[in-house]
Image (tube, rainbow, N blue to C red; front, side):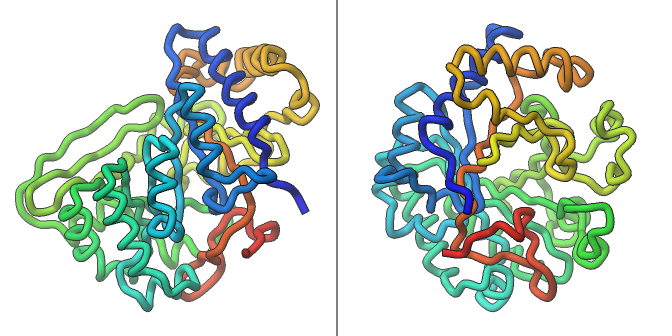
Length: 331
């Protein structure tokens, strides 16, 4: 059984990555993302997720956390005191029955109450919604919920886990289809070029609040590593959109292509400076040399800090969608 990433390694890799960024540019995002499976279940001895966020925040990092929201209500003061910069809550249905079918949990109302409480406490929060064809009738209710709390709602379409992912044709629906079906009236529509490979379409109005989704661009899939990929026409996550660091000490450049990973296991016990030099050299001569090393300051480093989860998410009728199925530990 593999352990969660230790706080020492998380901090060392975060600092080393920041130093590598500085070798290519004076800019540094000083932002890292903590994800999991369910990152709020992370432990390192007596240290919990809130202590980890506080440690990283005190080192000057802006910490973003993606969570299912199951602990938000009960631990709201801990979230507030940790210094977390942004909380993203995955909320894929407002219908209790469908929510249970997706998550195998019956805590929808508690998750919603946690989101409301987070806003009362002044925390920065967003809601993520995965779009599943045939299970979208509650979307107007979710739009109203987010608008009332003045929090952004971010829509995601399905990302295939392999070339022959049979769930894609059954459940895939594009963000544009959803917006056309469920929204009417006049909106302010903006295209936002946030940074490297993160162009967003944002819809805002008094009626719908703030809704955004990522724009699919042919320019992205013409990237060297994507242009020859047989999944490029259905993939919604592009090469190096995120750099994922997992507990095997792999730095992953692509969610669906594990061969595009950088093995850091032989360097992980080296000094912070040694790891920074290793990252700089490997990125410069390899991936980013061909993919635009000028974009390094804009890359986001996402730590997959745990394989523990208290949900078992999947399609309402069908398989789990968790890309770590097979190693997932239900707690």
